[in-house]
Length: 188
Image 1 (cartoon, rainbow, N blue to C red):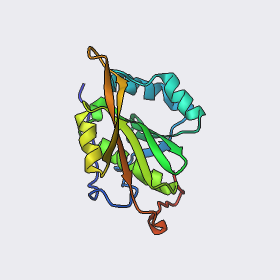
Image 2: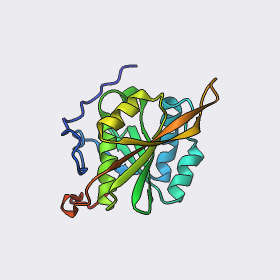
Image 3: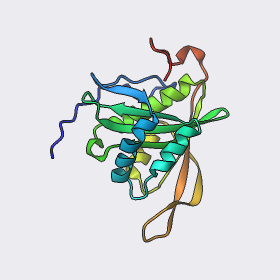
Image 4: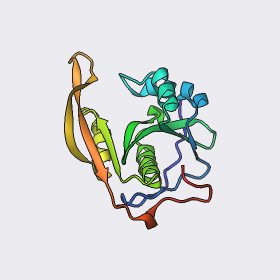
């Protein structure tokens, strides 16, 4: 099956203070709801060897975590992110692009959205864990200004090797209130 993939608009190199990136024409960014969970879980299954379950997503939404979905002009779900605010920082719990759409800039776009959303919530630090073997994601995070601050031994289930460590990454930025995200509709 061949899928026509729209190009992502050129984005500035990662700004020091996150700003909301432009979406491709006709694309939509929305809050994740319980109605999205089935489609999200299907993408998760295709994207990862050890995916989150439907229950993981349902529990995150029930706990008040911020889920965002990215849809193309046909309203097909392309990707999603799950964010958890904790005191004065945001934890990026999950960010996934449908494998059909990977390597076309949508992960970069969704990470930019996650950073800008964090800033819009007046938080100035984002933390995440990533597998060292996920070299594509790791390269994206480093390009976006994340730095390694630690390692969690045996954090992830792995295949034949037992368990895999998690690298803990952080990105901080200025608390400049003039750079806060605002849109005509408000914050995400």
